Length: 114
Length: 114
Image 1 (cartoon, each protein chain N blue to C red):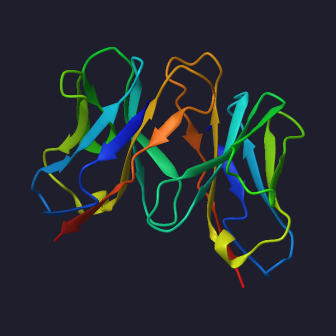
Image 2 (image 1 turned 135 degrees about the vertical axis):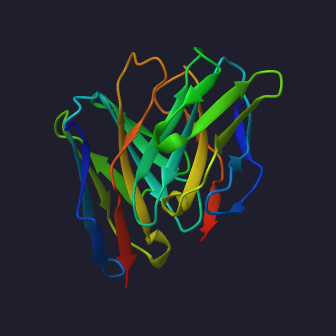
Image 3 (image 1 turned 45 degrees about the vertical axis):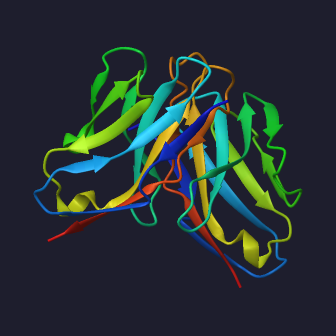
């Protein structure tokens, strides 16, 4: 089945130690998104790739970076995680030209910062 | 401007009784509307979507929603709640103005009492 895959599902890192979260998709969608979701809150968009074009949300901290080496993969890099970065990180994809810009979500990676 | 209001942060129902989760939206365009469900420590799963076709939309797991333009509402209903329906539900609006155009409500937590 076509899907959005996130690895790992659970990640523990130390305060200040760089961490990378991974997302891959078999849907061949050209748009990929990263969201941060804190407990009992709605997902918050960090940035998205429209093909190779990177689009950062205005309030996304510089501590968060992203890479998209090809259509299928997208990475979220947190350069120096703080305790406030502990959250669920969701990857999503969508297809340009879709009537509704429906997004397909992965299962998420829960990040713990110790 | 676009926004989504979920009128109840928490809804509690008994198993076998009807479910009503309320959502109101505002949009400058003809929006697409979605309901997503999120079980604990999982990603978001699409329940149903409205994209300017039939105003009564049927989704998975017996859920349905009715788009009422005059009331700017898109309430989610189910005739009979099941224990497995306990989860967080997000009402989401999308507009055809770019790739990063999902606007989330704050979520409604549904509890199902045995």
